[in-house]
Length: 301
Image (cartoon, rainbow, N blue to C red):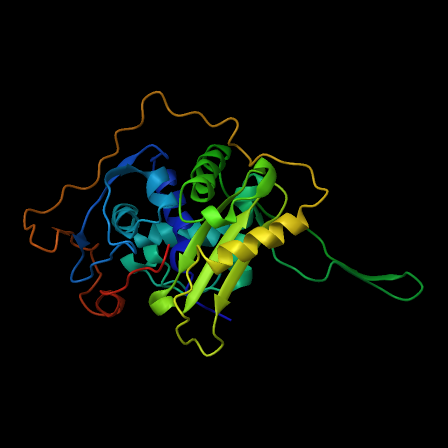
Protein backbone atom coordinates (compact mmCIF):
# COMPACT_ATOMS: atom_id res chain seq x y z
CA UNK A 1 0.00 0.00 0.00
CA UNK A 2 3.00 2.31 0.23
CA UNK A 3 3.47 4.83 -2.57
CA UNK A 4 5.48 7.99 -3.10
CA UNK A 5 3.35 10.99 -2.06
CA UNK A 6 5.16 13.42 -4.35
CA UNK A 7 4.35 17.04 -3.61
CA UNK A 8 1.52 16.12 -1.24
CA UNK A 9 4.36 15.69 1.29
CA UNK A 10 5.42 19.34 0.96
CA UNK A 11 3.12 20.71 3.69
CA UNK A 12 5.36 18.99 6.25
CA UNK A 13 8.40 20.71 4.70
CA UNK A 14 6.71 24.10 4.97
CA UNK A 15 5.48 23.41 8.49
CA UNK A 16 9.06 22.55 9.50
CA UNK A 17 10.12 25.90 8.00
CA UNK A 18 7.48 27.74 10.05
CA UNK A 19 8.67 25.95 13.16
CA UNK A 20 12.15 27.34 12.43
CA UNK A 21 10.79 30.89 12.43
CA UNK A 22 9.64 31.53 8.87
CA UNK A 23 6.17 32.81 7.95
CA UNK A 24 3.85 32.52 4.92
CA UNK A 25 5.26 35.90 3.82
CA UNK A 26 8.91 34.80 3.99
CA UNK A 27 10.48 35.15 0.52
CA UNK A 28 12.63 32.59 -1.24
CA UNK A 29 14.01 32.47 -4.77
CA UNK A 30 12.52 30.19 -7.40
CA UNK A 31 15.45 29.64 -9.74
CA UNK A 32 17.49 26.71 -11.10
CA UNK A 33 19.34 24.88 -8.35
CA UNK A 34 21.77 21.96 -8.28
CA UNK A 35 22.69 20.00 -5.17
CA UNK A 36 25.58 17.60 -5.71
CA UNK A 37 24.37 16.57 -9.15
CA UNK A 38 20.68 16.62 -8.21
CA UNK A 39 18.74 19.28 -10.12
CA UNK A 40 15.09 19.34 -9.02
CA UNK A 41 12.97 21.07 -11.64
CA UNK A 42 9.56 22.66 -11.50
CA UNK A 43 6.95 20.69 -13.42
CA UNK A 44 6.12 23.69 -15.57
CA UNK A 45 9.84 24.32 -16.28
CA UNK A 46 9.10 27.97 -15.43
CA UNK A 47 10.69 30.09 -12.71
CA UNK A 48 9.08 33.00 -10.88
CA UNK A 49 12.04 34.62 -9.14
CA UNK A 50 11.43 35.83 -5.59
CA UNK A 51 8.20 34.36 -4.20
CA UNK A 52 6.55 34.12 -0.81
CA UNK A 53 6.26 30.70 0.80
CA UNK A 54 2.49 30.93 0.28
CA UNK A 55 2.89 31.30 -3.48
CA UNK A 56 5.63 28.68 -3.64
CA UNK A 57 3.44 26.08 -1.92
CA UNK A 58 0.33 26.93 -3.94
CA UNK A 59 2.28 26.54 -7.20
CA UNK A 60 4.18 23.52 -5.83
CA UNK A 61 7.59 24.91 -6.78
CA UNK A 62 10.17 22.16 -6.38
CA UNK A 63 13.17 24.49 -6.27
CA UNK A 64 11.81 26.34 -3.24
CA UNK A 65 10.96 23.08 -1.44
CA UNK A 66 14.54 21.91 -2.06
CA UNK A 67 15.93 25.17 -0.68
CA UNK A 68 13.79 24.88 2.45
CA UNK A 69 14.93 21.29 2.97
CA UNK A 70 18.54 22.47 2.75
CA UNK A 71 17.89 25.23 5.29
CA UNK A 72 15.93 23.35 7.93
CA UNK A 73 17.54 19.94 7.31
CA UNK A 74 15.94 16.58 6.47
CA UNK A 75 15.93 15.48 10.12
CA UNK A 76 13.73 18.41 11.12
CA UNK A 77 11.31 17.61 8.30
CA UNK A 78 11.15 13.96 9.34
CA UNK A 79 10.48 14.92 12.95
CA UNK A 80 7.67 17.26 11.90
CA UNK A 81 6.12 14.56 9.69
CA UNK A 82 6.39 12.05 12.55
CA UNK A 83 4.64 14.47 14.91
CA UNK A 84 1.83 14.85 12.40
CA UNK A 85 1.30 11.10 12.03
CA UNK A 86 3.62 9.72 9.31
CA UNK A 87 4.89 6.40 10.69
CA UNK A 88 6.57 4.85 7.62
CA UNK A 89 10.35 4.91 7.24
CA UNK A 90 11.61 8.20 5.79
CA UNK A 91 15.03 8.62 4.22
CA UNK A 92 17.07 11.48 5.67
CA UNK A 93 18.10 13.18 2.44
CA UNK A 94 17.16 16.41 0.71
CA UNK A 95 14.96 14.66 -1.86
CA UNK A 96 12.46 14.01 0.94
CA UNK A 97 11.24 17.55 0.18
CA UNK A 98 9.68 16.23 -3.05
CA UNK A 99 7.95 13.28 -1.40
CA UNK A 100 10.28 10.42 -2.35
CA UNK A 101 9.77 8.42 0.87
CA UNK A 102 6.76 6.11 0.57
CA UNK A 103 3.64 6.33 2.74
CA UNK A 104 0.19 4.74 2.83
CA UNK A 105 -2.94 6.71 1.92
CA UNK A 106 -4.30 6.15 5.44
CA UNK A 107 -1.31 7.59 7.27
CA UNK A 108 -0.92 10.68 5.10
CA UNK A 109 -4.67 11.33 5.34
CA UNK A 110 -4.44 11.15 9.13
CA UNK A 111 -1.35 13.38 9.07
CA UNK A 112 -3.39 16.13 7.36
CA UNK A 113 -6.11 16.03 10.02
CA UNK A 114 -4.30 18.37 12.48
CA UNK A 115 -4.57 21.13 9.87
CA UNK A 116 -8.36 20.75 9.91
CA UNK A 117 -9.03 20.19 13.62
CA UNK A 118 -6.94 22.96 15.12
CA UNK A 119 -3.63 21.16 15.59
CA UNK A 120 -4.42 17.84 17.30
CA UNK A 121 -2.94 14.52 16.20
CA UNK A 122 -5.24 11.58 15.58
CA UNK A 123 -4.88 7.80 15.69
CA UNK A 124 -6.67 6.18 12.72
CA UNK A 125 -9.06 3.41 13.71
CA UNK A 126 -11.93 1.40 12.27
CA UNK A 127 -13.58 -0.32 15.25
CA UNK A 128 -15.14 1.97 17.83
CA UNK A 129 -17.20 -0.52 19.83
CA UNK A 130 -18.07 -4.22 19.88
CA UNK A 131 -21.33 -5.37 21.52
CA UNK A 132 -23.14 -8.65 21.91
CA UNK A 133 -26.67 -9.15 20.55
CA UNK A 134 -28.11 -8.26 23.95
CA UNK A 135 -26.11 -5.04 24.16
CA UNK A 136 -23.22 -6.05 26.40
CA UNK A 137 -20.11 -4.01 25.51
CA UNK A 138 -17.16 -6.28 24.83
CA UNK A 139 -14.82 -3.57 23.58
CA UNK A 140 -14.87 0.21 23.51
CA UNK A 141 -12.08 2.29 22.03
CA UNK A 142 -10.46 4.58 24.56
CA UNK A 143 -8.69 7.88 23.87
CA UNK A 144 -9.05 10.42 21.11
CA UNK A 145 -5.54 11.01 19.80
CA UNK A 146 -2.04 12.21 20.53
CA UNK A 147 -2.73 15.70 21.81
CA UNK A 148 -1.58 18.96 20.26
CA UNK A 149 1.03 18.53 17.52
CA UNK A 150 0.93 22.04 15.91
CA UNK A 151 0.81 25.38 17.68
CA UNK A 152 -2.29 27.51 17.13
CA UNK A 153 -0.19 30.11 15.34
CA UNK A 154 1.21 27.60 12.88
CA UNK A 155 -2.21 26.03 12.26
CA UNK A 156 -3.49 29.40 11.09
CA UNK A 157 -0.41 30.05 8.98
CA UNK A 158 -0.51 26.64 7.29
CA UNK A 159 -4.23 26.92 6.57
CA UNK A 160 -3.63 30.36 5.08
CA UNK A 161 -1.11 28.75 2.69
CA UNK A 162 -2.99 25.51 2.02
CA UNK A 163 -6.23 27.30 1.11
CA UNK A 164 -4.36 29.23 -1.58
CA UNK A 165 -3.70 25.95 -3.44
CA UNK A 166 -7.40 25.70 -4.28
CA UNK A 167 -7.87 29.41 -4.98
CA UNK A 168 -4.91 30.26 -7.21
CA UNK A 169 -2.62 27.23 -7.26
CA UNK A 170 -2.42 23.70 -8.62
CA UNK A 171 -5.65 22.53 -6.96
CA UNK A 172 -8.17 24.86 -8.61
CA UNK A 173 -10.28 21.90 -9.79
CA UNK A 174 -10.87 20.99 -6.14
CA UNK A 175 -12.45 24.34 -5.23
CA UNK A 176 -15.73 23.64 -3.43
CA UNK A 177 -19.06 25.25 -4.28
CA UNK A 178 -20.77 27.66 -1.93
CA UNK A 179 -17.61 29.37 -0.76
CA UNK A 180 -16.89 26.53 1.64
CA UNK A 181 -13.34 27.08 2.99
CA UNK A 182 -10.93 24.26 2.25
CA UNK A 183 -7.22 23.57 2.07
CA UNK A 184 -5.21 20.89 0.35
CA UNK A 185 -2.27 19.83 -1.75
CA UNK A 186 -1.71 18.09 -5.06
CA UNK A 187 0.94 15.43 -5.52
CA UNK A 188 2.38 13.49 -8.45
CA UNK A 189 5.23 11.01 -8.18
CA UNK A 190 8.03 10.15 -10.61
CA UNK A 191 6.91 9.09 -14.11
CA UNK A 192 3.27 9.82 -13.16
CA UNK A 193 3.02 6.57 -11.14
CA UNK A 194 0.94 8.18 -8.40
CA UNK A 195 -1.47 11.10 -8.46
CA UNK A 196 -2.83 12.54 -5.22
CA UNK A 197 -5.09 15.20 -3.88
CA UNK A 198 -5.31 15.44 -0.12
CA UNK A 199 -7.49 18.12 1.37
CA UNK A 200 -9.81 19.10 4.16
CA UNK A 201 -12.48 21.45 5.44
CA UNK A 202 -13.31 22.32 9.03
CA UNK A 203 -15.47 19.16 9.02
CA UNK A 204 -13.72 16.39 7.08
CA UNK A 205 -10.35 15.30 5.69
CA UNK A 206 -10.10 13.20 2.52
CA UNK A 207 -7.19 11.72 0.57
CA UNK A 208 -7.60 10.67 -3.07
CA UNK A 209 -5.02 8.50 -4.84
CA UNK A 210 -4.91 7.35 -8.46
CA UNK A 211 -2.40 4.83 -9.80
CA UNK A 212 -1.87 1.32 -11.16
CA UNK A 213 -1.68 -1.75 -8.93
CA UNK A 214 1.58 -2.85 -10.56
CA UNK A 215 3.18 0.58 -9.97
CA UNK A 216 3.47 1.24 -13.70
CA UNK A 217 3.21 4.83 -15.01
CA UNK A 218 -0.26 6.25 -15.60
CA UNK A 219 -1.21 8.15 -18.74
CA UNK A 220 0.16 11.35 -17.22
CA UNK A 221 -2.39 11.62 -14.42
CA UNK A 222 -1.49 14.51 -12.12
CA UNK A 223 -2.72 15.50 -8.70
CA UNK A 224 -4.43 18.58 -10.06
CA UNK A 225 -6.52 16.63 -12.57
CA UNK A 226 -8.48 13.44 -11.75
CA UNK A 227 -7.70 13.35 -8.02
CA UNK A 228 -8.71 16.99 -7.51
CA UNK A 229 -11.96 16.45 -9.43
CA UNK A 230 -12.77 13.25 -7.53
CA UNK A 231 -11.99 14.97 -4.21
CA UNK A 232 -14.32 17.86 -5.06
CA UNK A 233 -17.24 15.58 -5.94
CA UNK A 234 -16.68 13.36 -2.91
CA UNK A 235 -16.44 16.26 -0.47
CA UNK A 236 -19.43 18.13 -1.87
CA UNK A 237 -21.55 15.00 -1.41
CA UNK A 238 -20.20 14.37 2.08
CA UNK A 239 -20.91 17.96 3.16
CA UNK A 240 -24.57 18.03 2.18
CA UNK A 241 -26.45 19.35 5.19
CA UNK A 242 -23.31 20.30 7.10
CA UNK A 243 -22.82 23.93 8.16
CA UNK A 244 -20.01 25.90 6.56
CA UNK A 245 -17.02 25.96 8.90
CA UNK A 246 -13.95 28.16 8.72
CA UNK A 247 -10.52 26.57 8.63
CA UNK A 248 -8.96 26.78 12.11
CA UNK A 249 -6.83 29.83 12.72
CA UNK A 250 -7.33 31.55 9.37
CA UNK A 251 -9.74 34.20 10.65
CA UNK A 252 -7.29 35.16 13.40
CA UNK A 253 -4.17 34.99 11.24
CA UNK A 254 -2.58 38.36 10.70
CA UNK A 255 0.31 39.22 8.41
CA UNK A 256 3.24 40.16 10.68
CA UNK A 257 3.89 43.89 10.79
CA UNK A 258 7.58 43.11 10.29
CA UNK A 259 8.30 39.72 8.74
CA UNK A 260 11.32 38.14 10.47
CA UNK A 261 14.48 38.60 8.44
CA UNK A 262 15.30 34.97 7.84
CA UNK A 263 17.79 34.75 5.03
CA UNK A 264 18.73 31.70 3.04
CA UNK A 265 22.28 30.41 3.56
CA UNK A 266 24.84 32.30 1.51
CA UNK A 267 25.39 30.40 -1.75
CA UNK A 268 28.89 29.24 -2.61
CA UNK A 269 30.81 31.16 -5.24
CA UNK A 270 31.00 28.37 -7.83
CA UNK A 271 27.81 29.17 -9.73
CA UNK A 272 27.74 27.46 -13.12
CA UNK A 273 25.44 27.04 -16.08
CA UNK A 274 23.25 24.62 -14.10
CA UNK A 275 22.42 27.38 -11.63
CA UNK A 276 23.17 27.70 -7.94
CA UNK A 277 25.22 24.89 -6.41
CA UNK A 278 24.45 24.07 -2.80
CA UNK A 279 26.49 21.68 -0.73
CA UNK A 280 24.39 19.10 1.15
CA UNK A 281 24.47 18.80 4.95
CA UNK A 282 27.45 17.03 6.46
CA UNK A 283 27.23 13.29 6.16
CA UNK A 284 25.18 13.22 2.97
CA UNK A 285 27.15 11.45 0.27
CA UNK A 286 27.27 11.92 -3.48
CA UNK A 287 25.72 8.52 -4.10
CA UNK A 288 22.36 7.01 -3.21
CA UNK A 289 18.94 8.55 -3.83
CA UNK A 290 20.20 11.98 -4.88
CA UNK A 291 21.93 10.68 -7.99
CA UNK A 292 19.07 8.31 -8.76
CA UNK A 293 16.64 11.20 -8.51
CA UNK A 294 18.60 13.89 -10.30
CA UNK A 295 16.08 13.88 -13.13
CA UNK A 296 13.07 13.81 -10.83
CA UNK A 297 10.53 16.46 -11.81
CA UNK A 298 8.28 15.99 -8.83
CA UNK A 299 5.23 15.50 -11.02
CA UNK A 300 2.41 17.62 -12.34
CA UNK A 301 1.74 19.84 -9.39
